[in-house]
Length: 64
Image (cartoon, rainbow, N blue to C red; front, side):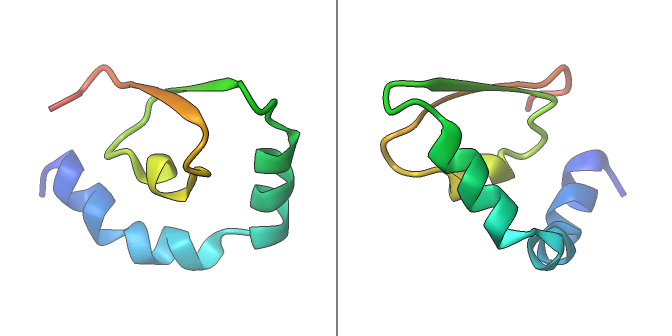
């Protein structure tokens, strides 16, 4: 199994493991005009969870 397939397969497990309160507090702490840069972004799962107003740059050495 390649890395991308693995990350997609474990996404539902990761989703269930998230602490919604911590994630909400993290996003609330971002400045309204902030820019989140994620190093080691994998398949970009965090992007799916970001508030629509956030700016986001994904960086991954194994980007496809």
